Amino acid sequence: MKILSTGKYLPEKVVTNAFFEKLLDTTDEWIFSRSGIKERRTASPGETCAYMGTQAALDAIDKAGVTPADIGMVIVATTTPDTVFPSVACQVQAAIGAKNAAAFDLQAACSGFLYSLILAHQFLKSNTCQYILVIGAEKLSAITNMEDRTTAVLFGDGAGAVLVQANNDPHVRGRLLAFDLGADGTQEKILFLHNANTARANAVDLGGGAYITMSGQEVFKHAITEMAKSAQKTLAAAGLTVDDIRCVIPHQANMRIVKVLADRLKVPKEKCFTNLERYGNISAACIPVALSEAEKHYHLQPGDKILMVAFGGGVTWASAVMEW
Ligand code: UT7
Image (spheres, rainbow, N blue to C red):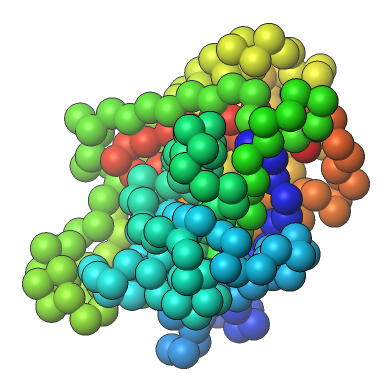
């Protein structure tokens, strides 16, 4: 599997920490020092999850020079679909005119994009199709309790996309070298959507009374442990060390998590790409948006190896090493 192009879409509306200082018993100092977040983007009512996913997809398609009819599959990783069905993927498929594509959503919370990318790899490996659009799109503002200072300040909205292509030529650079997937459903209560069943019964807007509930410290500990283990497993499976890695794209939940992860992996901090200062945690959209920005930041060249690693509700985790 080769990444042909990346794309992203972030809503224009910027919400700074100062906004929350007026709304809640919190401070810019607390938010920044505990999480590393300074601002996040918030979708306007017209910016649905499907709209943001579509814009990110179009960005990736434009750059790749592939026509939508060539795309054989659209996978959208999301925890915040606008409706239970149709899926966000079907809405994106229609909006971009990918008339020959199968389309479905995948839900693995913040690990969803990597789960989807790895699944796309398997489909390409089995010659199911030639091009797959893998998107992470989230409208977390729809499920954030703005009265809960422990979560309201952390999340944002946005979408990222990658267009991947089957690469069966061993002489051509660009492939997924190794990956790891995992989950531990016994930890479901440390991060979940409260009132989700009521909201699903209403089915129009997933928001309808459902909101993110998190035991921050518990998630923090599990995130570090599982992401470090998963990344080490994937590096070993690829036969690589961190010295071979051009950059690490970690899930963007907390700068302190990224720092501890970097220490455990013995990766210099400058190799770890972060944008959470600007966007906060956008769940499944974190890694594709970061990837899209890291491509420019590190001037990624064919042969560069990148390590991606995520952790999310469920709980779930995933990591992958890609050659650019
Ligand atoms: O994307 C999925 C993965 N998600 C994550 O990885 C998130 C993991 N967790 C975290 O990032 C951190 O645990 C948080 C940023 C959520 C919280 O940071 P913390 O250092 O773990 O804080 P804490 O939960 O231990 O809370 C410390 C204090 C508490 O007050 P008391 O009990 O010490 O009086 C909280 O009530 O900070 C208080 N607090 C706040 N104070 C001001 C919690 N939220 C806020 C706030 N402003 N926004």
